[in-house]
Length: 491
Image (tube, rainbow, N blue to C red; front, side, top):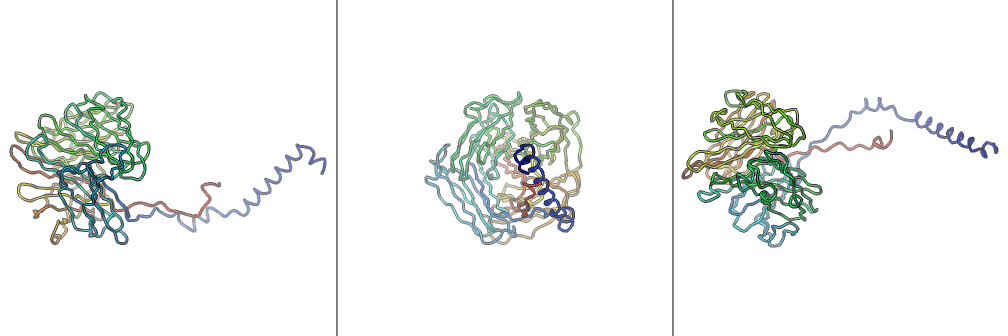
C-alpha cells in the first residue's frame, strides 16, 4: 500500500476509484425523474393583477389630461393613483425634475374618470398607481386648437417607461417633429435614438445618446439628428434603465398636428388598425430595420371584406429604410385596417389627412390584439365632436363588450358587438354630456380583435381628427413558477 501511495500513478487510480464510488451512490439514491414528473405536473405561470403602474403624459401644458381605472379590474387591496405635474424648471437632462412639482390630485375610486386642464408652463404629468387603482389604469392627453400653427386635435396615450419604443411618421423635412423623453424610474437611464429614413439608416451624432437622471426629462428636436428625411422611423432604446418616449409632429404649411402613437415592435406580421373613413389622404409607412431588403404583402380589411390593393399588394422595402405608399384611392374612404406580412421583421404606421381648406392630420400604427381588453381615457361626443371605435377581426369572428365610464353620473349599461371574420366594424360611441372613458373587453370565444378610437370635430375650414390605437390594458402580468429545485445548477 505504501508503495502504491508513493507512486503518483497509483494515487491517481485511488482518486478515480473514490469518485466512481461517489457517483455510484448518487445514481442509486437519485429519485426517478420520470416518476416524479408523472406524479406532479410542471406548474404553469400564474396570472396576477398588476399592482403598480406608472405612466407619463409627455407635454400636457394647455391640454386636458384624463385618468381612469376600470371597475372590477382585479386589483388586490386598497389603492390610490397620484397625478403629479413636473415644474416648469425640470425639463433638461440631468436635472432631478422635482423642483416645483405639484400634486394635482389623488384618486381612489376605480370606475370614475378624472379629468383636468393642465395650465401652461407645466412639465410632464406622471400618474403613479398602486393596488386596486393600478389594474387597468389608463391615462391620455388631448389638445384642441381652432387656429394657429397647432390647429387641430392632438391626442396621445400617456406612456409607460420601456427599454425600447418605436415611432413611425413624417420626418423633419415635412414637419416639426419633437421627441419627448422622461425617466420616472429611480435609476439613471442611458438612451440611444436611432433614425431610419427613406434613404436608409441615419448616422447618429453626439446628440443621439442621452443620459437622463432619475426624474429627468428632455425634449429633442429630431431635426438636429436627421434634418433631411421626409418620412422616418425612430427607435428609442436604452443601454441602461427605462424611459418614456413620445413624439409630436406639427406638419409644415399648417397641415395639422398630432402625436405619433407607439408602434408594435418589428415583426413579420403587423396589423395597423384604426384607418379612419372619409376623404383625405391615407399614407402607409413601412420601415425595415433589417440589413437585407424585404418584400411586404399588404392586405386591406374593410366592412365589406379583405382584399389586396391592385398594383400595391407588394411593397419592396430596402434594408434599413422607410417606404411610403399612397392608399387613398385603394381604401376608397372606408374605415379600414391593414395586415402586413413579410419574411423579415418590419414596423408600420399610417398618416391620415382630413378634409377642408385647412385639413388636420392623424396617425395610427401597428398594434397588438386586445386580448386582455383595452381602455381609452378620453372620448367626446358632445356638440360637433364625435368618437367612434374602428374594430378589426383579421382571423376569426370577434366579440367584445363596450362599457362607457362617464366623468360624472351613472354609467350606462355595457353593450356587446360582433365583428365578422376578416372584416372591420365601425361603431359610434353614444352621445354623452362631457368627456368619458370607454372599456373594450373581448368576450369568451372571440378571435383576436384589433382596434382604435377615432375622435373628430368639425371646426372652421376643415375637419380636425385624432386616432388612438387600442392598446392592451395594463391589468394582468404572468409570473413564472418558482420551485425548490437544484436542477438548474446540477445535472
